[in-house]
Image 1 (spheres, protein in one colour):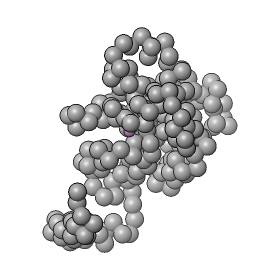
Image 2 (cartoon, rainbow, N blue to C red):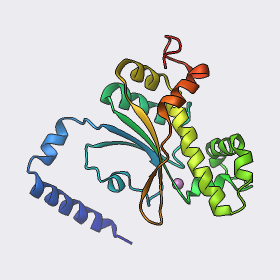
Image 3 (cartoon, rainbow, N blue to C red):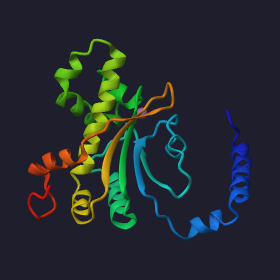
Length: 216
Ligand code: CO
């Protein structure tokens, strides 16, 4: 285990290395942030957002929670999306899950998980929506990993259901929404290649919040 004191030593080394590459690094970043990407991912310690994407400080706006959920009554994630789209004007919103996700696995077990029950209920709902497909997968790991992918897809839909994303896309042509899965075994990102335009069009039949009628 890294000692508590060691972390402050690490921090000083990191500052020195940044300044060696760019003497104005912190001064420049202190003025403003203009990230093009919003990342919504799992809190899992093995999936460090900036690191896996090769992005530096200032390049990624980040929200993480257990199993990368986008729940319409979660004031936290909704505030992040609103701020990222309205104030920062991000061009891309990424929902990134990961295979072997503990939250998804927990949602596939028959047990009382206390405070986690209402949170993981969202994943049980995703399972119910895709029950036929999932029940037909015999292998447990494969079934879990497929639910990880379907969960990412559903959370992308939840992002697309927000008024701020629909209205910004209508007015400016961005942001677009992407679904990814990170593979813990090899460190690679998999793009699920969700059809953003198609999903937006489909979603708007019921969830149109633009106030301007069907647009897409
Ligand atoms: Co996870």
